[in-house]
Every structure is written in structure tokens, then in C-alpha cells.
Image 1 (tube, rainbow, N blue to C red):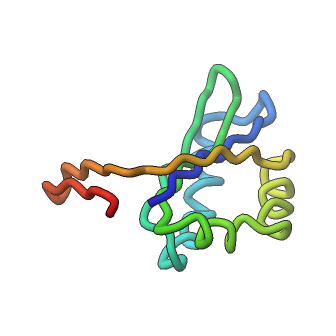
Image 2: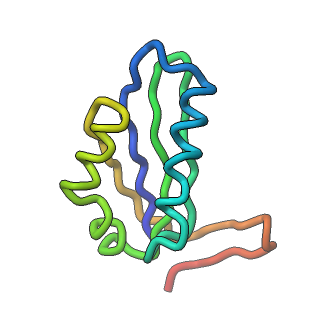
Length: 104
């Protein structure tokens, strides 16, 4: 599994409610997305940073989404291009389903 953390600076006048609405409006785009296991939206009111934590089946699946067009979509929506940080996730603890996944 691969974790991608996406960050972008938001304008200082974006409120928590506005961020929540922007995120909720974009959520359907990620439903049933090939290779995406889970997405968490991020909001830091003090630093005016938005973003997401994505759990992907593979880096290839993530890179198939994080295209030039996707980056332009993020820039058009939030005003800046996103920064992406990648991590391997060799072990996942999921308390909702009561399971631990260990990479082969």
C-alpha cells in the first residue's frame, strides 16, 4: 500500500465551513476511484493549509490520478498547485473492521 499526503496553501480568508463545502463537493470525484482505498481531507485553520491523505493500492494507481490535469484541477479549485509526499505503508491497523494488514 502507498500513502500520499497532498498539501496546498489556502487563501487566508477561507473559513472552515468553506473548506468543508469545497471538500464535500469534490468527494464524489473520488468515490469508486480505481486503486484508491481511502481518502481523508485535511484542514489546518491556523496555517491555512488544505489537503488530503490518500491510501492507494499502489503508487502506479496514485500516479494514474495525479496527472498534470489533476494538478491543474487542484490549482483551479484552491489557487495553488499541490505538493505530494509519498510513503510506503507496510502495516495498516484498521480498528473499524478489527484487522491488521501486513504487506507481503
